[in-house]
Image (tube, rainbow, N blue to C red; front, top):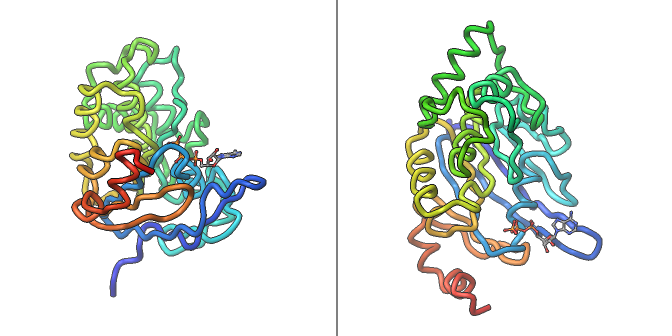
Length: 249
Ligand code: ATP
């Protein structure tokens, strides 16, 4: 039969007092699929991400990971189920080296409640895997530098390495390009493009061209609501999306 989807969100909603941050959002991320969520500031993208990652409890609806209802499962336990994720506010140990940050993440360090789903092995194995992961994101040359010495873009690469080192079964990326220069954005785009296709990716991103260039399917949100879901070409051609992104609404 068909593979169990990596992620199913069903009728997700979140209210903050009178503010309906997210209203009735459903999505399915299939095995090996890459999906983007776009929308202007305040669309509810971050709140949706947090409900999927487990940082925020939904007011309505349900989240399933790998066929299992995790709506009431806390973030750390979702990580143990195989969720690798990045954070909008950087969660790095700034005075530690790049390699040590990855090693902490590999051991299930608590910087971002990263607790991984597989036994992590010996100290040497953890170091070897951390080095390999840094290599795979193009950051090996920075291994012995402190995080404080890294550029913004390099810090974003490191965050992705820390999400990858636990061998995730799904990757959740929260606005990875936010605050990056055009050159840093291009590097990041290449990095995400060359990630293994076996890892399904949900990418929340304000930058429409980045999200459309990296994903198989895109959902656009506005004011907490679903606008359209389709291929990048379909979403790019959508009249409402054009109006939103040209600022005519
Ligand atoms: P951005 O691109 O700025 O991250 P977004 O699409 O991620 O925007 P959210 O941050 O999810 O949007 O916010 C959606 C709406 O919910 C906004 O109106 C916001 O003010 C409101 N909101 C979000 N978090 C809270 C909170 N903790 N308390 C009250 N209102 C909130």
